[in-house]
Length: 385
Image (cartoon, rainbow, N blue to C red; front, side, top):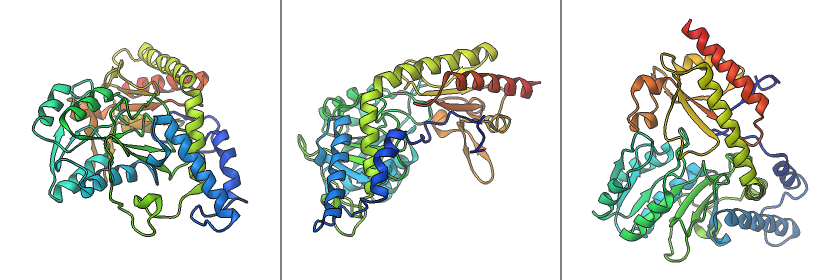
């Protein structure tokens, strides 16, 4: 499949190809400049440390942070674990009451479940049919006393954009810390952690055309100063917030990916939006009963999550082997269950079971969109007889 030149990749919400500019920046640190950034007694280590510092600055600039507030991790999942476990264990929270949404990524929901077993009080809010949090419901919970709110900026399945700045303002009003999973928005939407009231932010390199296995956690250092207790011990790296030898080539790659994203963000956004609208209208022309899942207005440009009534998405994907997309279902060894994200939005089980997520990206072309439209319409028509 990977060698098939006719294959169309529309799963950019899952991962992205490395941008050639990123690969070029990384190559020297995979070859001659292979030093350990913690080796401060020779030129190899100094070169690595300098590269890490540059990457930290590039990432910080993209979200309006200070370089010292950036902690390198293996990805957004680790960042979320470090943020939530680390801040609770540090005592930085006003109370051990955590609030999150039922539509969050499993990295958040599983971490919350772990912390609940450790004695934290947990409130999991449902969302509206459009996928957005009800701010009145959130504030009602916050008035009861809350230490930590964790809400993602952009949902990984539906692409729905939460009103982050309003959430941050509510957290500030009620004295709660705000953690934001920005894996799907980092480098795609403008982010300013100060104006948005974010205290902790998770992101990954591989969602923005950078390498896999690298991510960051932003930890605010002033107004207020937030502390996290390291979850990986051994060496006290990253100012005792995350131990382990730094992945210098990938740090360089994520830094360059952040730089490119900041430079190309508006052009990428407008081009991808035009392609997504073309995809949506093309599918609607051949499948009039197509259903859009989640808000279309409050949605990131790269995402289109739709349901095909009377069609099971798993079977549909099997009928389109040349098209790389994702279902809205979570497969287990014994059954296919409806997406918990779509179900939490109040979407009926059969509609959720027929959901497909299309993820567009920087390298998606109009020709690929047009071919994808034909492939999907032909497959749906064939399955409906």
